Amino acid sequence: MPVANFLSDPAAMRDYAGKFHAHSQTIDAEANKAWASANSISGAGWSGAANTTSSGTLEEMMRAFRNIVSMTQDVSDKLNRSADEYETREHESTQILSS
Image (cartoon, rainbow, N blue to C red; front, side, top):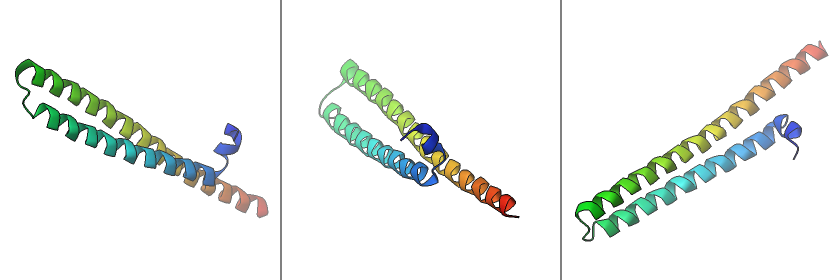
């Protein structure tokens, strides 16, 4: 779909907002699984520098995933708001033109 058509199609905007929201939830769930799995591995006997390094890496990974989740949620929210705004403006324009 060309961008011009997408930007004037509230249903398409909401559809993509839903897709971004679903991706966000999937990323969050998978990141939490990875965190739990990695903690199980490191908690099974790692200590000292190995455990510290592993924990630091996991924390960085989780921070990156949280940023991705935040960005995809932001895109979803903005697409929904844009769809609402477009419909409001379209309705207002129709009212003005029909009077």
